[in-house]
Length: 398
Image (cartoon, rainbow, N blue to C red):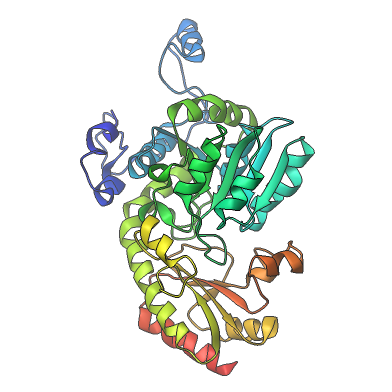
């Protein structure tokens, strides 16, 4: 039996990250069991029928659910305070399913402009192919959300902080706006992590993660997860996932469970490092701008203080000289690695305008504040003083 319900409400997140959702077999194993199986055996044909009819609880097929995957889902439910969850093959599988499962031709989607490039592809290219209208708004402006709202608006989508400029949106206010027409608010909470921001408590209906990032935290596996009400997860979302096949593999779920055990320790250490490096970069003569929600000069710093418990693990900074200068800085780094991932134990740096957001036009990038000199830094678990020295020597060579 799972201990999620017995412990989640009375234990701290740090404890739930180690224990919540654990199922043990008759062998009494300490580490969560890894069930590498596609299917499940029934004692009788009638038992199989009952399982498919939903009259008997249990697993049917790994595309529908798996004991190891369910442990991961239940641990995330305890952490997020969600009624239910469904794990997916990747973060983008989570985004795709969370949107498509509740939309049809003629519906309208409202979304913030500041989004990851692949999210924009779904909104601007895929959904319109199926007759869904999409309006992108300036996410930080509540009046823009109100003005774009329609009676046929079914879903609102945003990420906060955004990738890569760390723009924050008032989740509670946007939730109130979109709920006025019965729309659901879907939040990509990857940059904030489930530790530092709780969208469901702020009024969001659905929260999703790329588990590839902080949840794994060690660059090993792809994964995603969507959390919300039992009605949503076991209704439209599960139906969509059962028939489209984007489920998480049991092995990846087992890796994610191991990642969750250290999530609290890792993310708090990484956030402390990010705050330290943001201060160092802001004082550096070669840096023209620093974006970090924990700094008083961040455009939405007061909002960050209200809806986040930390400035997070990510820092964005801009240098003079555009792309050439940004490339020289990255190439001169000795500890920090160039990669487009984030949330890893290793510090990672990337140039958004030529990687994660390269498919956008120059006009779109500039509108989002993604200049050719902007660099995104994901802070890892190395000693902060070593990372500061590495950044300093690379910037001074520029």
